[in-house]
Image 1 (cartoon, rainbow, N blue to C red):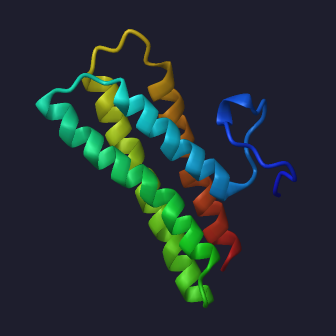
Image 2 (cartoon, helix red, strand yellow):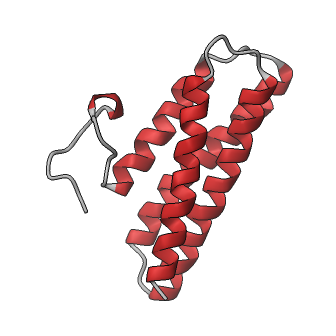
Length: 129
């Protein structure tokens, strides 16, 4: 189900975004903004690098899935989306749990969002069988 109105800022939307391409884009954007606020330690540099790659890959692979030429390719791309969502959640948990953040609500939101992506991609895979 796609929203008919295009949104540019996830914050302004009272409910979830149903356009999954836009939702994954906004997720990556929020991850980047979250990571910009983290302390620049040796450890965080590696965690941030891994997280930005994984979160960006979720949306990029979803776009690829939507452009796939075969059902087999579509399913493979959705599986990659699920895998990258799991990896993103892993790196986010490490970031949140190893940094003494004064406010970890954004990190927790992003962890929850990646968990929701895992469920969404699982559901897409089940329905594509």
